[in-house]
Image (cartoon, rainbow, N blue to C red):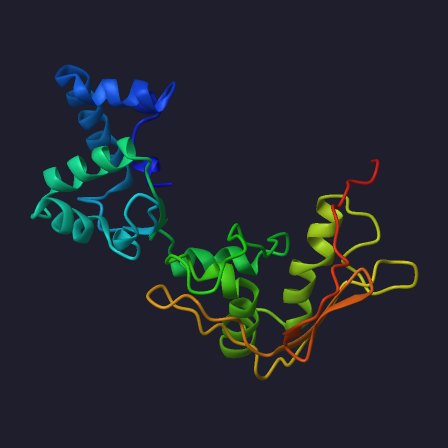
Length: 241
């Protein structure tokens, strides 16, 4: 959420408590000072690194950076206007956001480590709704297309291990993550030469390409790139240590 830009002390209690704090000049000044300290620690001059993904109270803000949104709502995009916009928006219910802060060199260094698992915190999306992070559509496809096929940072076998057996073993999910007799049949069929992630930050609503079939617990939930009526998934439980 965009509330990551605010100090924890400002958000304690209920929304009414927050609204009361920013209505009090002394408390508001303290919050703004803490926001400045947070920016300084992060080495940031403003909030242009944050992009609104979903704003329920005002969907016209979706896809806008904080300076762009401040310009829309306040007529100016100065740092003071950005801060006031963030404070006001949180009082109206807040918004989810994309924060651009990762470093490609760091990412590649982490990917090379054999204990790095590949996953995503992107959730399921309704096609065309909001402006979410493209990882929700193409996280693993990006690894297979960019970091395996194009950059050759990982072998395809190693990348698949990081997505399947390694997390299954780490989180003690019994009989998951491997193709073997007696295990659950969770299988993804894809073409290594075609797999790609067409989603972008500006245009995120595109399904990953190159995947043809998905089998969950032995049930075919995607066949030839299309959803079936099979719903064979379920909760996963840790096995006893």
